[in-house]
Length: 228
Image 1 (cartoon, one colour):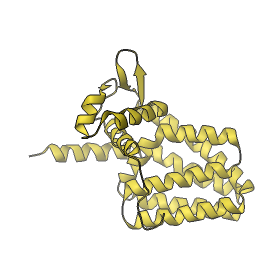
Image 2 (spheres, rainbow, N blue to C red; image 1 turned 90 degrees about the vertical axis):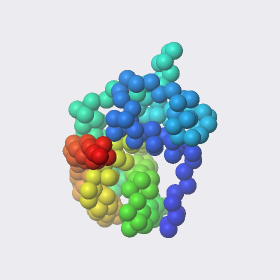
Image 3 (tube, helix red, strand yellow; image 1 turned 180 degrees about the vertical axis):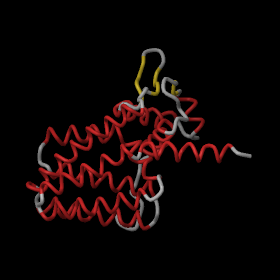
Image 4 (cartoon, rainbow, N blue to C red; image 1 turned 60 degrees about the vertical axis):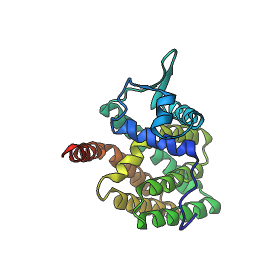
């Protein structure tokens, strides 16, 4: 995994592109996502587009409606902030349990993934960094050894993935994220349950708090792009 990009399927890459267009407001809430139009826009066939839309429907970013097909879901900024609040508590619980229950295999997996994140961070590649840090979070959930919790955490991760990926583009956020992951890993390896829970909660909660920063950054970039 180190020193090379994580392999990504075409449908997954298309899902990320559509996610970004939704999160940045290019595809507005309530608008219909036509498979043929998307295939033309992204210069691909309808099959990977259809697969990408199905993935997005699972995360809740789009809804499938009779006679209209895929439609962008309406999620307010307040709703997103509330979701991040809940996600912060869920991941904090994962970290608390992981600090008590993680095996040697869990420790090795988290350590190796964290090293891989460092490679993406050093390359200043926010999208690749996101893919690798997402694996870190999934490994954290697995280390809790609570199947119900793992399912709930993974479900929330999917619903927020577009916004968690985009917020890494806020200035200095990738640096802060990697530093926070280092603190999480150190607490987990030390077996400090409360510290692991607290630093993990703060790591996720700040993503919701920085969402306003993200929207301001995107707005500024859009205005600059529109200027003659």
